Amino acid sequence: MEQAVEQRAVPSLPRLGMPAPPFQAETTHGTIRLEDFKGSWLILFSHPADFTPVCTTEFLAFAQIAPELKKRNVELMGLSIDSTYSHIAWVRNIEEKFKVKIPFPVIADLNKEVAGLYGMIMPGESKTETSRCVFLIDPNGIVRAMIYYPLTTGRNMDEILRVIDALQTTDKHGVATPANWRPGDKVIVPAPKTAEAAEERVKAGYECTDWYFCKREVPK
Amino acid sequence: MACINVDGTLVASARKLLLTMLEPITVEEAAKRAELPLFRVRASLREFLQAGFVSEAKGSYVLTDAGRARLAGRG
Image 1 (cartoon, rainbow over the protein chains, first blue to last red):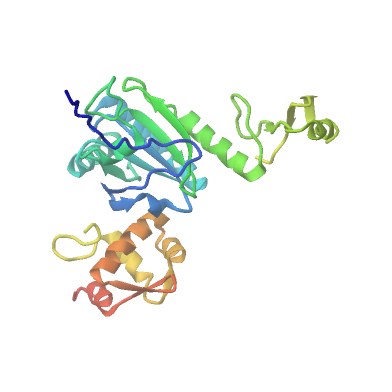
Image 2: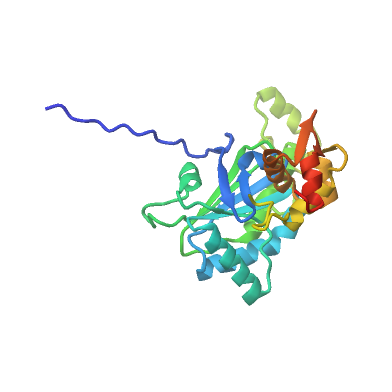
């Protein structure tokens, strides 16, 4: 018996170092395209649902770090599988109850189009809600970092800011950043790729523990 | 359309942005003058172009007669 083979186009999920999937979406700030953020960093994040407590704490926290992000040329955009009306009502409720204005747009992804493109729905957790995903997209539209949190765990804004600082330091100085790095800490000089470069590295005046492990300072 | 209220008037941010376009202006300069993020300006410009409120030439945007009329509350 001939077996029918169902063929479905499987979208390629975002990958680090690759262009972020383009989209056009309805938001609380009107119709926005990914390309509108060209020239700025973008933190695209999803939350499970409007009018839920953990998500509310996260929106308050994102609003709180928004000025710091602005200084770093970073924009924010939220997303959930809710309507624009729900988003507007929730954002207004946050302003009324918590006295905090939400300054960033929120995508109303009722048809799950953007959530699907970015793999924000984790069917093992929920088939109807997006998990707490964070995509850091650089000014050229390249995905530079992805962080996923489960439905039950609110995000750490310090870490999101830290990753932005680390990525921008990497881009500016051509270096890497060690574990738990914070702005002002020494950075890692990328390991040399040849024996000759290794020889030269230890004489180059860096703070080296060995030829592959050298640090240096960068302006904060 | 996000830039126009149901009564046909412009929302505040759209008015502020259109006012920067009395003379030809780049997206970046308009964003600076209107104190709006670049993404908001780009999204609004799409609507303005579609509505015929502005025209684009060589990367600069300027109000059309329809745009001026709308700003004056006549459009």
